[in-house]
Image (cartoon, rainbow over all chains, first blue to last red; front, top):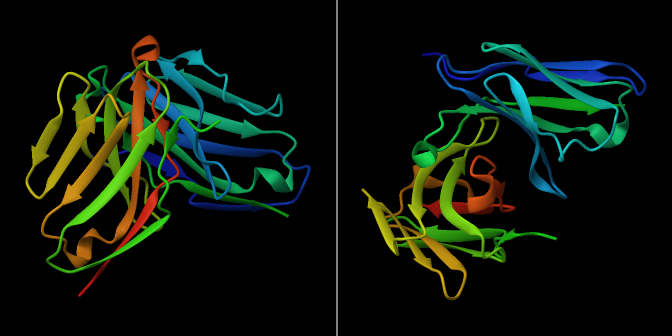
Length: 114
Length: 113
């Protein structure tokens, strides 16, 4: 298995532009998580899905952020409009129901908003 | 309000010695704890976990200890190797939200050859 695949690896965009981050979870995993890592706040959970259904989006910072999971093999995190304070590394992770084995994270997308 | 705390941002240890990484938590509803390791430009990788019904779990060179009364856990790495140099995150999940993992801020470990 190729693991959790995120794209792009790096994204530089101008303030006000729309940004879409993509994630392909591990096949067979029924949970998908979006995290954001910053120096100030560490790893924050933004939203997670179970069987493609959003379960908890309480970590989504503002209405500018939205996430979708149209099928079991694909999810997107969209920021519209983007702001400089959104600059961070965004991680996607997937897991099975059995938490014994933890999550499998992707390599992340480093977003820079200028 | 940080529910999972790692008060040491960094730690340096000589190769071959023991590395001890500490973690404190505030939420008494946490009942499962995990450690993740992260190398630069990669995502965190799961290392070891422990349930609240245990006080110790061992996997090779890695051992996690849990002291529920003190709301404290620690990760011991023996012997430490240069490849262990990474950021280590402590994480916890509450009974009430089984699927939600809360991460600490991380401790950067440097193992000096």
